[in-house]
Image 1 (cartoon, rainbow, N blue to C red):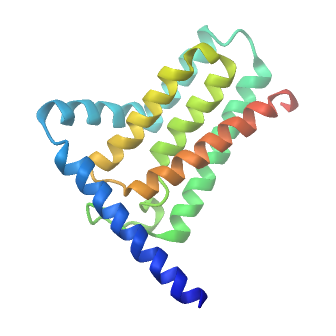
Image 2 (image 1 turned 90 degrees about the vertical axis):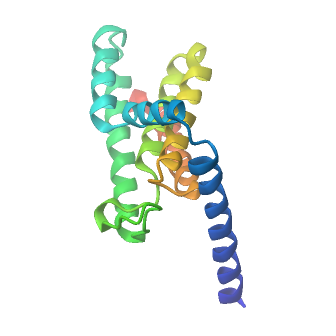
Length: 174
């Protein structure tokens, strides 16, 4: 019975993923969308995030050393968890690329963006809306560019959100 339920869930998820991928990556297609979503994806790349984090902590971090250490350790731990999960699941990307160390599930961009949004919005609640809008844009851009299935970004967002909240809560231990 359990196998039967798992098969039904897998086919249901596959159908939802395929439909969501079509809606985002085909129905929204335009030159302006191409520019916006490529820019959003690039803003969630590791190098860009690292640079932005360094600028923030250098100029606006208000010498919150424990928060900065917690942020860095948490971002690293979240990234390690995502990479390990990618290696274990080895899910093929919608564009057909399949590399075990960088498979589709879960989305690292979504995890990183939501980690940043949840951690920084806990530090500065006045920026909550723009931070989460940016994180959602980065996540949706990954589906638009056919690098991830919708379920990849949902799980990545959950991992990032949870990581950001957890490491914000334990920041004083650093």
